[in-house]
Amino acid sequence: MSTRRYVARSPGRVPENRRAQNCRFSTDSAEPRLLRPKLLDMAARISNGQQVTIHYRLGLDDGTVLEDSNDKAPLVYIHGSGQIVPGLERELEGKEVGYECDVQVEPADGFGEYDPAAEQTVPKTAFPADAKVEAGQTFQTNGPKGPVAVRVQRVDADSVVITTNHPLAGQRLNFKVRVIDIRVAKAEQSPPQDSG
Image (tube, rainbow, N blue to C red; front, top):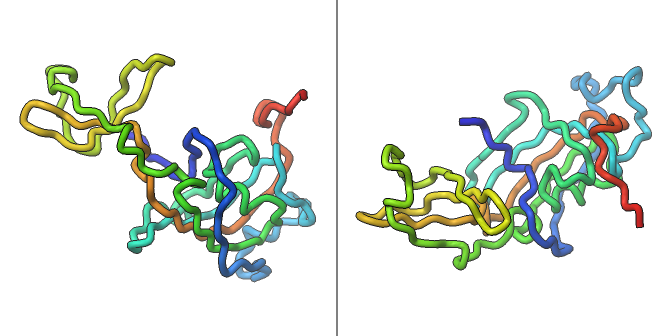
């Protein structure tokens, strides 16, 4: 099973709300990854269409740490393309290399509020006979507009409760972010421009 990166954006309407705390710029020369003048325009600011590299840690209010890119490769994304959650993307707009910030992203700006209407009870026979159905598993089914990913919420004797809610729906997301690199994205990477 591939590793999920929870900074990826979920579809849906995005209200204008987020909170940010303890923001600062880092000029610590002990972190050479931030200081590469031959490769970076140090005056560059994050805007739509740029390729941005960040290190981040993602946690929940109960103290659970879901991901920490400092233990692996940093995340590279195209700003304005919806590749990260809206609240975090908006906080990074206009920032420079070396920017660090703790950001709290409310559910509406993250993976959405939990929607009970997105739950459905189906018979076990709806799954392949050889499938080992357990809570937390993800399956794909056909919806009116094409394939839909569903997650197993609960398994009962003869039925299974499934949901299309994201696993982090309804959760406030706590990010600690550091901007490492900003550069112009290649043409094939840039998001489409609004022709209107």
